[in-house]
Length: 110
Image 1 (cartoon, rainbow, N blue to C red):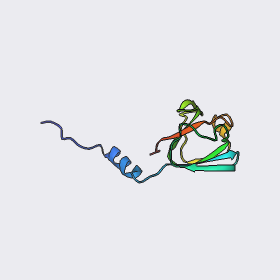
Image 2 (cartoon, helix red, strand yellow):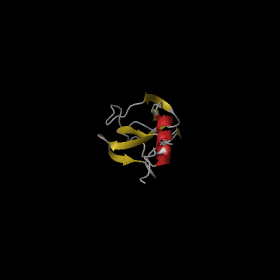
Image 3 (cartoon, helix red, strand yellow):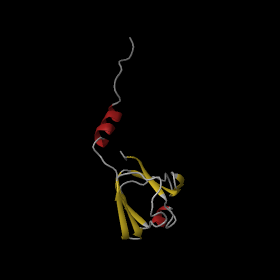
Image 4 (cartoon, rainbow, N blue to C red):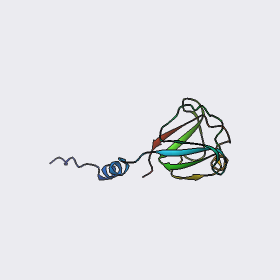
């Protein structure tokens, strides 16, 4: 007898938890969340204020940062994806200060 086609309950549960979530990030021009700020829930392949970001807060989502436009030259250490949290100094997470030219949300942490 063939196996019944049972849905993947883990995937369904994950989909339900992320269905109503909106990614959000706040970028700052100076360390320790000072200077100009830019809040977004969108990805940007190039930003008009490139090379000026020194700190950021991830409110929701997993985010990647790039040295060059069009998502080229991924920045950061480890997986190079940054989840919910406070990042008061980009250099603490392997991103040279004032080098971010683009960023994008790549999903959500489970």
